[in-house]
Figure 1 (cartoon, one colour):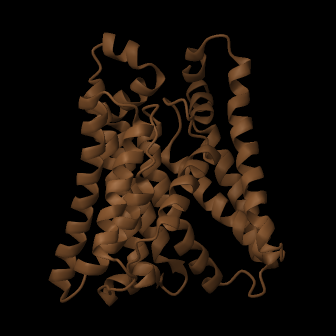
Figure 2 (cartoon, one colour):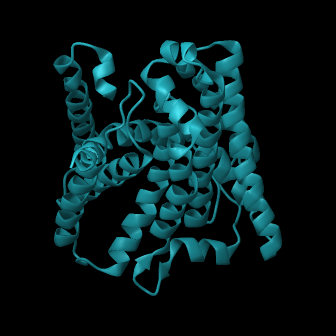
Length: 326
């Protein structure tokens, strides 16, 4: 019984985000002109997965009590790079996919090294590196264009068996292959420890620098996956500062809505995924209820403010910060 209660308490935020998302999506589908159809689910999934992958990228860093403001720029850079090299024959496109992912890893490694070796604050570091990454994207795509290998794009943005969105299967594969092994590994547990108390972790022999480095590397990889998927959705690349900034801010919103603590040390990428799907559904709900587009950013901001306030409210209920992780 105690194990069951502990598991429930540990995953409470994730389960809550999942439940709220289901309710919101049911309302959205119930009021959509096309109803609850395969096309509606596929379109919503493709949009949601883009933000979900960037939210996963943000989660890796936030767990260490940092924040990565370059995830949107890595996302855009991967999109632009993908529109250049994920082309040609199948084997050439496969090498292009690998190249995009390695570029994301390299961006994450640069962030990690500057934070660790330079002893700079993550928020300052990632603002600077994000500008560099966006500059590279603009160098690749000064104007929108490019292409992508069609069979890959169709396979990942279509439907399996005519019903299930392939994008959701790909997202589940990312969770199974990337997040779950990481969260259960020694380096993943070290990241949680660093987020809860870096000083205590260091004095306990936890590899603080290594935990931070891998968090940024995996963040870059996840953001690159998102940018690559954007290339598959749009069949092109675009160095858009607005897109990069929007996805960066929305990834933070998704992390908060998914129950990941901005103070570090607690939360899950799975919760952040449901937070991302929830945040996307908010916009869809505003659309089906015909809310004036000029009011939509205000409403989304109020929802985010409420979520942040509820997340911070717990701080007033504890006498010692360590109680947050008990």
